[in-house]
Amino acid sequence: MMDTNSFLRAWRRFTATRGVHPAKVFSDGGANFVGAHTLIKEWIQSWDQHGVQVQFPNTLFDFQWKFNTPTASHMNGVVESLVNSVRKGLDAAITNYTRS
Image (cartoon, rainbow, N blue to C red; front, side):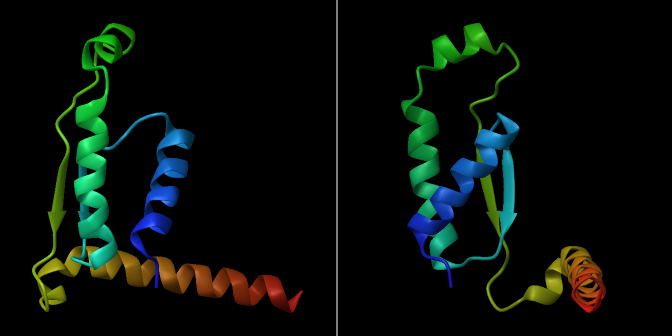
């Protein structure tokens, strides 16, 4: 299980690689995500928004984190289906790679 600090380090790598923070994030209501949500909102609010706006005119400072309804993963069927597809694909790729 990943704690909040581990997730924040992963978030920083993710945004550094892409050069942008996403405007919307969808996730389950894990404690690490809930804790990170508050910290990330504080980071964005602490930016020199005028300076960033001058350098990157299309930057939005609106950040929304949508959490799934607890104990209702069936309400997020499309995402769960995509996760299942990716897991199957990765499993097949890793299995084939390790056999060669």
